Image (cartoon, rainbow, N blue to C red; front, side, top):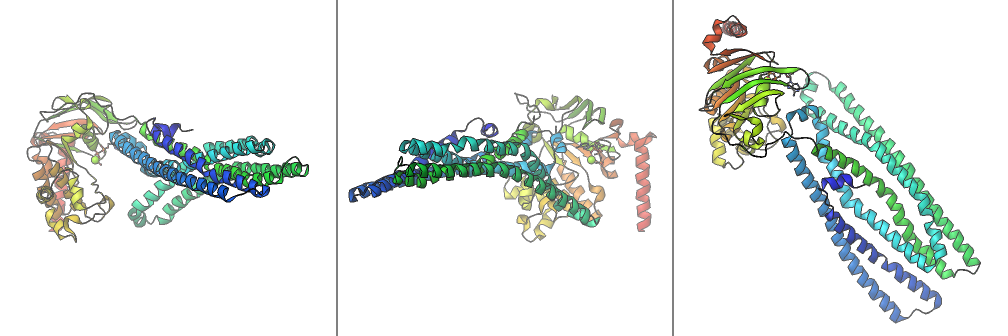
Amino acid sequence: MFDATKKLSGGDLKFLNRARNLTILEMCFEGAPLVVLFFVLKDLFNDSLSIEKILLLTLFLVVAFIFRWISALYAYIDNSTSGVELTCSTRVKLGERLRKLPMGFFARQDIGELNHTVLFDVEKVEYVITHIYSKLIGCIVLSTITAIFLLFIDWRLGLAMVVAVPIALPMLLWAEKTVAARTDRVLDAQENTTSQVLEYLMGMKVIKSFNQIGEKFRRLDGSMRKLKDASIKLEFGVGRGVVSYSAILEVGFVFLILLGTYLTFDGALKTEIFLIFLVISLHFYAPLRAIGTFFPELRYMEKAGGRVNKVLEETPLPEPEEDTELEKYDIEFHNVSFSYKKTHVLKNVSFKAPEQSITALVGASGSGKTTITNLIARFWDVDSGEVIIGGKNVKDMKTDTLLSYISMVFQDVYLFNDTIFNNIKIGKKDATREEVINAAKTARCHEFIEKLPDGYDTMVGEGGATLSGGEKQRISIARAILKDTPIVLLDEATAFLDPENEKHVQEAIDELVKSKTLIIIAHRLSTIVGADQILVLENGELTEQGKHEELIKNDRFYSRLWKERQRARGWKITKVQ
Ligand SMILES: Nc1ncnc2c1ncn2[C@@H]1O[C@H](COP(=O)(O)OP(=O)(O)OP(=O)(O)O)[C@@H](O)[C@H]1O
Ligand SMILES: [Mg+2]
């Protein structure tokens, strides 16, 4: 039953074993009052209770209480620490694994669902380990000790008391089977609801602007209803088994009373023994009934743990045993073909971007420009061909090493829900405040940051919701300036900026790319014209390659694009005038 949890803990359940042993000890001491009760009642009935005996029993109780308190405290500490430690190490492992997975995994996997696994499934494992596991062990031990004790006192009543257990247990296994069968549906529905809530909140702007509140809310509402239905079905199934289990135990108690009364009337059993039995047997049935509610939780935990393991078992991008350091930073594509799913995105692409040169990628939307930068950073592996940097295949480098040579400015800038300072510092973990400010100044963002209420310590909303597009771009350029790598991959988004912002962003880019190998996905004519070489992509194929002056002479895609843009620019100027 503990397979998934064992796997999560790397096969080592030592942490749980110590807590379990302490709980067993605790329960042994918890049984002490029962022993005292037995002797007190017996002596009371026989009129043989003396002060010395009372003192001795009291001393025994106090010692047992102290030992019980100590073992309970350490069992609790052990359980909580182990639960929290397992959660923490699992989340760190998840973080590590996710970092090493190809981006294809994230394209396949719904982020809301992944979020649910990382947060809630891991938490479920923690909850059961911290709060349920030792209680369950404790209940089993306490009822076993009580049963053995009572069997010694009177084996006939003892047998009558335990006879219900083998009849009740199949009900519990039935409940557990139901959990096994129905939990996946509940967990799926929970994941889906988390995902819908995330989408609803993150897409609020789009939802509002397209008047889709009703439609989106209906989807959210629908997923919540599905979750409700799946949960009710699960609870009903579990309840059926657990309630039947408890009922059979109750019947066992009634059987005990009937047999005890019969034997007492028959003179085969002393009244005091019968009374003692009745009182003490409550300590047999109560923990057994509690087991009924704890047991299915273990199965639930296993299912949640299994989901976490599934993410941990995803195959990361293969990494070489030996790392390779680079001395040169030119980039080469040799006959690279690539597809995200089945449709080919890049077909036999070959080019060379010499060190410290500017290569502009030009092409229609969807032609594969961003894909080229994704392959240079090895977010995906190529289907065929090779991506070579400084003479070394990117597959022969450890991912961390490769990424330490590359700065990326993405088309869509993502800022974390943190201060501006920390958002820039991502570029260099150990950067000083001065270095961050200098990078911000070079990226032309210092001025607008200074005007913010808390300057560099201003929090930006998640995704950078509180900043303009141009400001976000410049912050992402500041990150790259701070990282100061020999290769820069820049997905230009300046086409959407106002002239003032565009000027600032251009200045920032100029600072960033000094003496770097730059691959720039260019939308603006000035960037394209100034490039050392232009690569024209059409439907994933490299159709033209050369400098602006050369390409302009051909009557092909580039020269047509150039003429079109010129016309558009002329049209804009005429309009403004
Ligand atoms: N993660 C992904 N999963 C599946 N298909 C993708 C993925 N990313 C991109 N594509 C598809 O691959 C093709 C090339 O995409 P790419 O992002 O490289 O285009 P692009 O030239 O950068 O376009 P744009 O100028 O609009 O940014 C497109 O058809 C796109 O739909
Ligand atoms: Mg793109």
